[in-house]
Image 1 (cartoon, helix red, strand yellow):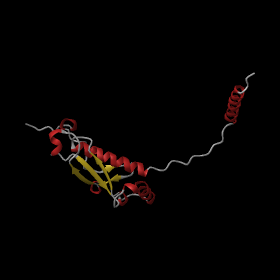
Image 2 (cartoon, rainbow, N blue to C red):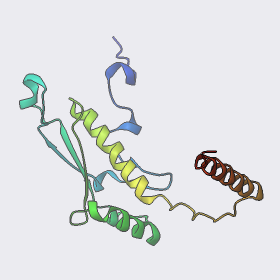
Image 3 (cartoon, rainbow, N blue to C red):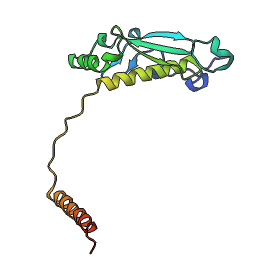
Image 4 (cartoon, helix red, strand yellow):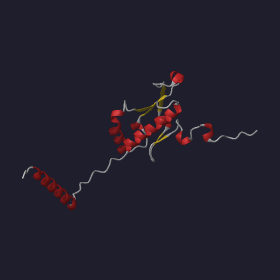
Length: 159
């Protein structure tokens, strides 16, 4: 009998791009290598039945973002400024405990870490350019003020 390999969906295996132990893609140009990620598992709090006391489903994912290779000086400075309050001894930690399975919590922690890094690396928005009100908007504003003033002026007379 010949063994036919099962497709990914049939075995429940995670596709390589969502692998909880592989490299973490953050942006098109930045991929965090798997050895830079540090995992820690513990028991999750809250309800969960009999398994809650035995399964280590809570996940903590740690990373030293300022030590990543391939970052420019501008990106490194941006990370330091935006993640400064969240860094403990230069290490950023995210947790996930919303799912009952450790693998799903690992995927959630990876996505959360990528989102935090993506937001911290994003370029600042362009400064607002001051604009002058159009002549039409100025005229409408003055006309409305005059109309309101006229309404209020008529309230005072009893004749």
